[in-house]
Length: 453
Image (cartoon, rainbow, N blue to C red; front, side, top):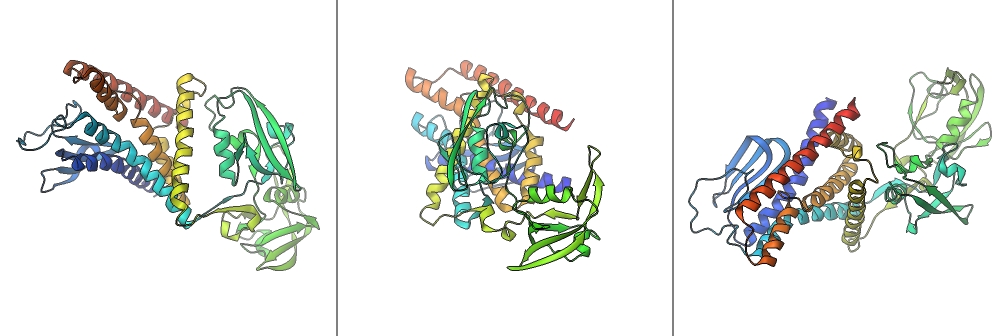
């Protein structure tokens, strides 16, 4: 069932972002009265199709890895032709250079618009994220070496304001492949402090690791019980899901990491746990069990898992992002711009070699991420739709023949030289573009296979 769910999530995600992209081309063409012959999502054998009153053929292909809008008079060797007489209809070639440029740009623009609308919607309904407090610092990590400790609240990275933990990773993502210094400002006991962390070719390899974890920074997770082990000590002695553990043997507990460390030092012992349940304090006596960790040490435990339900968390541990009806559209545009700049920077670093090309992902990685995002809920899934929509929009604007960016380049050349590019030049550039795109797809697919192996 997990595989079927992943496949369905992947098909839904790709169909949405590709469908919106092609819809942009389609609506722009219809606006300029250019006759559209075919609107297709996916490639290969048609699963279903129909035709409207304007003789436009709509279909859905077996492989949902792309799509196209075919207009009357287009010279595109990878698209299928239609042997129908449309002598009175306006063809793509009859449109002015400006009209063709708008139709070509409309696809990527639709992807950016989709992303902005998604971020606008998420801002309206409100999203709850991890706060920017540090919960735990990996020993001997860069953050540990340069003075960042647990319970610090990160408020700025490289002069960029930080509100939630997602902002930490976004700001750090901009520094992947860089050398220099990461400047961090944080609050500790209401005192503002700073740290300058030196980096050199940071994360330039193919390590698939979250930037915050690469620096040794873990989020602050509250000691709230999510699930209990059946017949475990916590269950036997009356602990319940949603309980907030405030102390163990009178030692104050602020984070899940602290709780885990304290319990680990108390194997097979009778302990006293103070909890907060429904705003009421209680004290529970229970006896821990033990296990042998990977290093052969005896560790204590009580059979509980951390809660991932933000609604059960104290307000200090989360950041709620919610905007008014008037400000939500502005937020949507800002988020789209922020991620667009990040992706453009990453593309530049890939081209320059600052980031390993092994980081490129293909359809397998996207399908896995789509399945995980769908399981995490509609907010995560919508966020992934927005991010991949921006990716698709930017990818199509690359000046590669066969992509929208390549077609815009040809239109610009035509405008400058005052006459259309020759058919032979178009054919060779299309072939070159096809080779480049297919090569990129094969490379990304090979990376996916390597990750699975």
